[in-house]
Length: 215
Image (tube, rainbow, N blue to C red; front, side, top):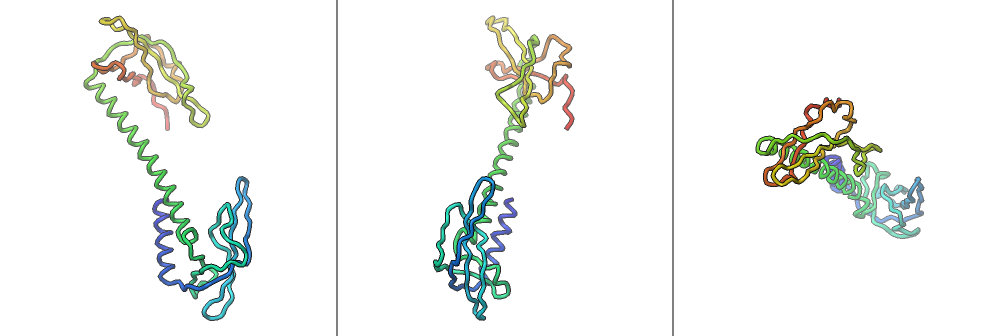
């Protein structure tokens, strides 16, 4: 989408380098309805240098009419393609490129955030496995993580508990989100958990014994 926005920007730049500026008149405002919105687009009439009268509907519109019938507007057109004329305004010229590029950048930012989150998660697990303390916790249950829903589904988590022999405190550990029910594969009473020696709130429940979910 970012690349598409760049091409739209380049096309507009190319159009402006060839375009002829003249004056036109809004002859009417066309209303378009969709399931959830109303769009107003002006119909503009102008005369070319060769004396041809051209009428076109602006490619850009808004949910509130920005033009009135009889209003004079500046028009840009190419002599070879006068029906592809545009109103000389920011929205008409650059609106498509801006919207497409903005959506592309937003999606790109979301993708980068997800990638960064996964990379940090993998790094955290690696550090815990290398530098953390390996303990054996007792399997407690499999629960549905109802706080998270994707396409109407919630993931599962394995819960295990461990009592610290030094402090006698009971710790509950939850595994990462699992997108299948692991109950049928819990044929063991004990689960390995890697815990940060200085902060037991940082841990990783080892679920490597579970089968991998097919993609």
